[in-house]
Each structure stands twice: as structure tokens, then as C-alpha cells.
Length: 379
Ligand code: HEC
Ligand SMILES: [Cu+2]
Image 1 (tube, rainbow, N blue to C red):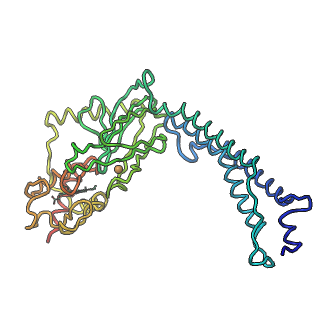
Image 2 (spheres, helix red, strand yellow):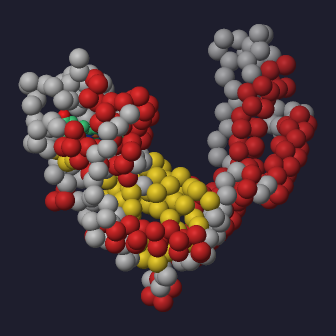
């Protein structure tokens, strides 16, 4: 029982389903698309959005702009039509309850175009990516790097091994600007982890446009060249346990001379250590300063409460005086020197991993202060 008004809305006088309002809407969407596409072309990602701190990030951003450029009209038209049709063909008060919209099936030309155009875009993106991705994973001649180092994911920190350095560098990696680096990315294997809990981490440095899973037992050589000095955050993007959200690191890109100086410092302190020039001194610490350090660096994993009140690690409130736990997790008696040893070197045990002092960013003085503070806890 279609009224005149209803049939008019479905089909106009010429037998077209779409009226002048539709084409006006199309024009509006076209103009919005062109404006936004121009913005995509003109907008500099570096430095407004995210620095392009590695050579590859420049090429990655070109791919990003390519897909963004063509995504804009798709976004505008899909949502534009959705909104336009929802308003234009909304149910009106005079429509009968049983009214349904005009049923339209199959439009060959439209369906062909909206299949072919995105398919061509996807294939183009795939071909362009095919030339960029190998910059990260080069083979043969291209793989030759001035620096080859290792990045190992731990719960919950990053370990870096440099050629020529005996000691690992924790969390904060230094790299020289303009020097191609191959970073062998992996995670601690079960056999090396006393908890037998090898997990996957993910090594993400947004400014380098690098995101690589750190998988136990798998070593992925990742290639990049820093092109800007500065400090860039490393984020673990694979949920790896309770400490995941604390798993921050830094890549510090130095000038060549600053890097050489840093590297020489590392070497010097190794040599000093080997000669025993830096004994583990346990000078009396300042409990007040220790409390501040504790609240900043330890409370994510420890409470100042009895042993049983665990977070990631045990409660440390009765550390020096706990008849039910006379010994530390290392099996040694709870003396200041043994506690300092744990805070300095970390520990691996039933509860997990207590990170060493470099990871917690502690100086020798901080360690002494922390021991002094922990001694004040039990009353
Ligand atoms: C990422 C989590 C984490 C952080 C951060 C952390 N710890 Fe621990 N800590 C642990 C875990 C886990 C253990 C238990 C290790 C084990 O079972 O061998 C532990 C053990 C200890 C122990 C031995 C406790 C005992 O009863 O034997 C001391 C002391 C300690 N931590 C002090 C500290 C101090 C001080 C800080 C801050 C500088 C700190 N920890 C930061 C996880 C952490
Ligand atoms: Cu992680």
C-alpha cells in the first residue's frame, strides 16, 4: 500500500534511485578527501609527529604516507555515505511500521571498482614494502655492518653486548650516529633461565621504526643506521609478565666522539675492575636517601612489608630480622653485605629475577643508602 510520497523517495521521476542531494554529498566528500590528502602529503612526520631517527625510518614513513594518502578517501567516502544514507533514508513518522527500504542487489560496475582499486593499492603497497623491508634484514654484502652487537630480553630489562666489552650494558644502549649497526635480537632461553620461564619480549624503538619480537632460541639480526643524536625509548610490546610495564630501555645515539668516549669509559672500568681497583665497599648509607630511592626504584616489585606480602618479589619489611626466613633468597644469612650483594648483582630464584643495580639505575652510594633504609624497617 505504497503512498505517492514513499515511492517518490525510493525512485525519482527519471527512474533514478539517487537524487541531487546524493551528488551534492559526493562533492562534499570529494572536497574533504582532497583537502585531507593534501594534508597527508604536506605534513612532516619528522619532527611534528615522530622523529625519523634511523635511515630506514625515512623509507618506512614513505610507505606510511602512501597508505595514509589512499586511506583518507576510503575513510571519508565509506563513513560519508554511511552518515548520508542514515540521514537521507531514515524512517519518517508517516512511514508504516512494516516499511522496509528499497532492496538493491548487485551492482556489477560498483563492485568491480571497489574490488579492483583496493586490490591494486594493496599489491602496490606490497611491492613497495618488498624493497624497504630488506633494509632491516639484509643478506650478503649489504649485511656488512661497522657494529654487530646483541640485544637480549630479560624479565624485565634489556641486556646489550658489545664487541670488545666483557661486561654487558643494561637497559641503556649507546650507539654512534651514522654507523650501520646489526643488532642480534633474542630473548633469554629456558636453559639459561633458572625459572625455566623463557618468554617472548618485543623490542620497539618508535623513532627507529623498529619493532622486533625477542624470541627465546631465535636470533634475528636487525640492521639499521642511526641518523639523529638523542635519547630514544625502547618499549617492550609483548606482555611478558608482571614487570612488563616497567620494561623500559633507552637507545642513546651519540656523536662519534661521544660514543668513543663512552666506549673507552666502559673499557677503563672493566680494566679497573679486573685489577681490583673498585672493591665492593659498603660505606654506611643514609637511610632517608635510601627511602627515597626505594620509593622510586623498588616499590614496583617490593613492599616494605613482611616477606609473604609479595608483589613481583618478596616483602622486604623484615629483611634483617625474620625468624621464619633467616636466610636470603640467595641462601646466605641476612647480613648487610649479603643484602648489598643482591641489590648489586641481582638474584635468580623461585620468585623470579631481581635485576642487578645497572638495571635499577643505582650507584654504589644508592646501594649503601638502600641497605641502611632496609635496616630501619623492622622494629
Ligand atoms: C622487577 C622487579 C624487581 C625490582 C624492580 C626490584 N626487585 Fe628485588 N627482588 C625481585 C625478585 C623477583 C626477588 C626474588 C628473587 C629470588 O627469588 O631469588 C627479589 C629479591 C630481593 C631481595 C632479597 C629478599 C630476600 O628476602 O632474600 C632484596 C634485598 C631486594 N630484592 C631488594 C631490592 C631493592 C632494594 C630494589 C630497588 C633498588 C629491588 N629489590 C628492586 C624483584 C625486583
Ligand atoms: Cu618484556
